[in-house]
Image (cartoon, rainbow, N blue to C red):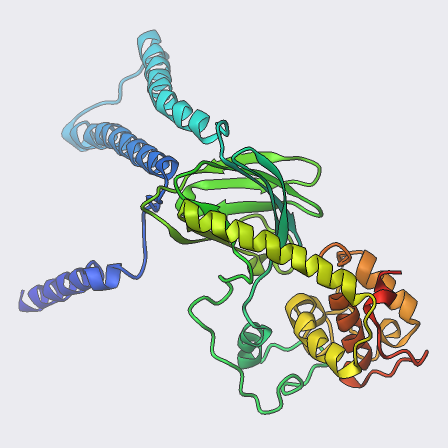
Length: 406
């Protein structure tokens, strides 16, 4: 008895520890209530349906266990012999039908509200690409032609991404353990590992925002849990979503592509920066001015001649941000899908072919002509033709922006 009491005490202490707030705060069993009105409606609907299901389960299993215990054979009960019962069949058809109707009425109201994109102040087109998001601002309070668009790309350094593989001994074929960083001193992963981007989507608070969602290669899915919105991005189709972040809830909200879209599906985060209207309008004006200045600088760069060192420095940064996920930081690639660039016929062959592939793309590789400026493309190609011991056979080891724009 004493041993049993000790065991019970130990079990009780373990349960108390597991359910304590300090431990329980590490994980979550329920949905998040979110920050928008729609997300709260979805959460309330989820809770309502959950308790409906609990009540139905109690009635069904209660009746089943009561019958099994009270009418068991050991108490002298004999099984009833009957073929059919019209009353019972009507009851078990009509009652579930009524329950489903009662559940469908509030659910339909929420679904209708979730798909009502009317009276929106801001319209943004979202295009999913492998493996990044393209945001295009189309209209703000009736002011169309905003001329503002940009790509949002994972900002986690490639060294943080490669660290888990190196630490576990998982290396690409024919790749030495120290081929990327000789000292083996890879940076620790930050708290925002695979969750941050270079350019977040900026929206205003207190205003309805409409999203037009599509894709240009494979199916993606734009999902932000705090807003309770998720919609597939399908090539050739445009789906609609909307959100309205309350004025008292500005801040950063994170999401993720929720549709398996290829090798780097896990490296396609979503970051939404919700700002007060005044701050959003200031950001919008600054972003439009900055994009205009970049376009002018890109046009002016066509007349400039950059040194090899300048292009190599910029090319390395751009390559690590845009190309290393597939072709790897050491240029070894992931054959056969993502071929190596170190010593490859492309990186050491005719420069015209090299430029064509980067600008237009091929197979799984997207074309970067619409994503990067001629200077950025020229810098990447210059870097690829000189890095990892590459020596171009045609003698062209420096590419200028005007070469890309031809």
